[in-house]
Image 1 (cartoon, rainbow, N blue to C red):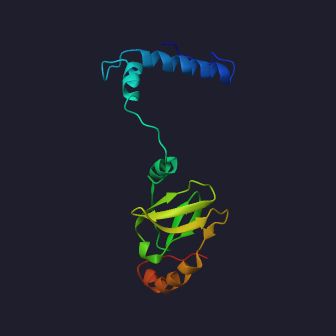
Image 2 (image 1 turned 60 degrees about the horizontal axis):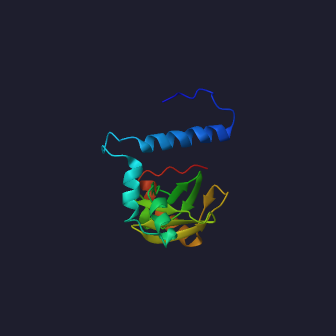
Image 3 (image 1 turned 60 degrees about the vertical axis):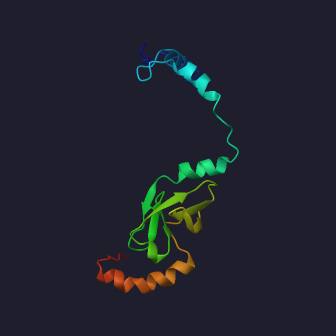
Length: 148
């Protein structure tokens, strides 16, 4: 194996190096399995089936990261905050943002709120604001700090 310290001129050269390395490594006997990966792939392909519902598959991938709801009943996502119902304060929720226009927030795989993606720092749903105001005195007594 060679080390490629500045031994390529452009992206195409680098891509060729990576592809050659991939082909070489997948044609050698693996220390883990004691078999050649390309031969295993050929055998496994017999059992693979096409994926017809790609959205379902993507939903599993995109919902892996958990976001904890803060004391203000908000979740931080990409530097912006989005409101959720107050009953989720302190709980961990998942976010799905497949279509790049909406942020879908889930609790135990149940959709609880959908917000349009926004450049605003704070994003509230009106139905969350009034319960937040009623919860505020209780949250202040529990140590919530309010900044102006």
